[in-house]
Length: 117
Image (cartoon, rainbow, N blue to C red; front, side, top):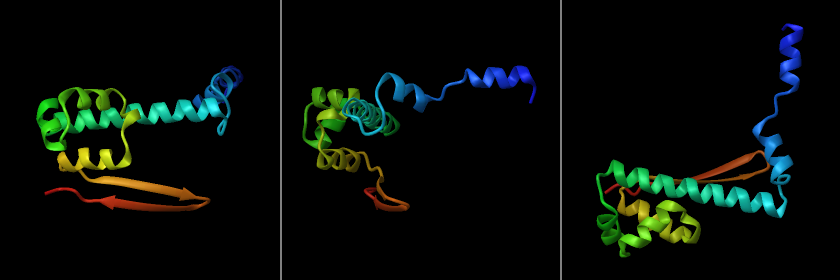
């Protein structure tokens, strides 16, 4: 590696380092809130992408789940107010497989729900 490349690499900052610096270190209240909101937004995007993949409108999905179109829209924007039960109901209505995982130390446990009809 050339000296110039080494100097350029010294100026590189990772995403984790940026989040630590500007949002807070892992485990801090602000960082936890940020990560939660990001995860809920991603979950909402997954709902929307799966609904579109199934060629359903928000109204049609709402009918299958038992809620209105406006609620589906809210979940697709951010699933922040959705419970785990609600998420399972939505993906079940979409005929999608859901996977949950929990990591404890070096051990990872996974649960897959096959909701395809």
